[in-house]
Image 1: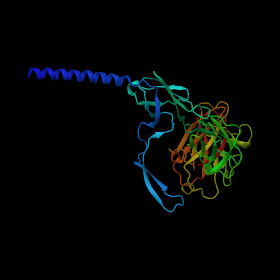
Image 2: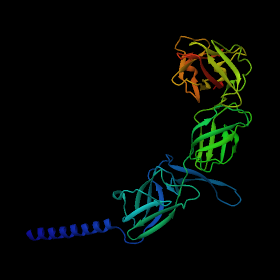
Image 3: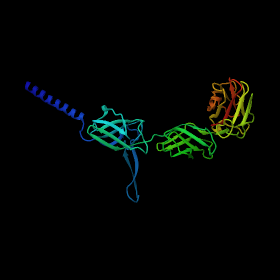
Image 4: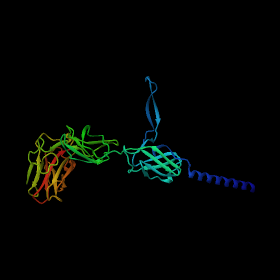
Length: 377
């Protein structure tokens, strides 16, 4: 019995030593040059189990057959801020991983001899001038693998002016406009003027545009502006539209063709408040302006603050709703235009529009403002 126990102990010791030796060998990894077989998404982002393909089975298309192809996470290009697994061999002793010449972080604790987990950071360069190379350097060699970094979608932060006529220039500001291929107002293409930069594009407003989102397309995709360009119902843009300016104000002077500070075009409305309750009051006597029927949700306008208006405010009133919660107070900025978009829900949710007022609000008088590009969106 003791003899059997001794033999068992001996064999167990041999197995433990062999196992440790085997583990040590596996931890050291292969000593050959590294290879890369493919790069794949670390997690399955597509929730579809299989992809359906129609396959023509002969050259004269007598009949077709539908087959299922299993989802494949292999990719030939990567996106910034996305996690991937690099698969290959002899990777355990990896010293560095780089994309387009920029080294990226990898966690050695997650690295095996056959895989490396990485996240492509936002700082990795991309574009037509790059090498499109993934390079891994290990203790025993180096491997290069063709792998492009995809350009991210563009982003639009603003555009000016908020409204303009056909042929006028609109400046679109944002980021990642690299190699822009097109700009459109809804479905209408716009002519790009000059040479765009990565942060700015100038375009001409297409004919017939009253209200539209702006779309910018680059190799990274297409992005839509959050704000809309133009107006669904225009009040003033160098001149009043039919029906507006039935009456124009009180305790103030108004110059409707003033050329001192136009925001767009050649003129703006110069209004000088002569007392603390002075106002630019614009009445409407045209065909009924039905809010629901016209799809109006907000009023949009631009105001330039004259000298001494910093820290002062104006009050916005629709349809004579003074002294109620259906008014909105906004600040002025001296020496520059400020664009305002005020939801109709904050102005009493009117069913129709009959009047628009910009009133002095607790400011010293006389004080002057310039008003341009008024309309409803």
